Amino acid sequence: GTIALTYAPSDRLRLWVNGSAVIASSSSFVPSTIDAAVTMTLGSSPVNASGICAGTNIVMGQYSGLMDEFQLHSRALNATEISTLATP
Image (cartoon, rainbow, N blue to C red; front, side, top):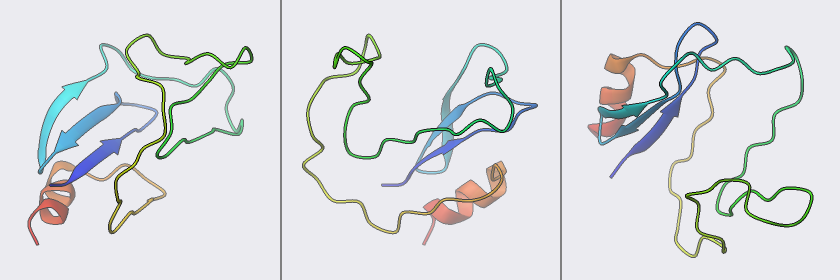
């Protein structure tokens, strides 16, 4: 399956599964500081300064699977582009 996460300053965070949007944040997501460094965590749960999982619904632990064809784009892909990625 294909999983994608898109973000644009004028839009919401959106999670896509197999080319279909399944959930979006309830409001526009705006980082508190423009041009600030953003930490992306792949394969592990993010932790706060105390070493505790930063989210309430995230299960701690290392990801023990495989990631194939990981892509990072400089802009949010649109629905057509996401669908194309999900349909090889």
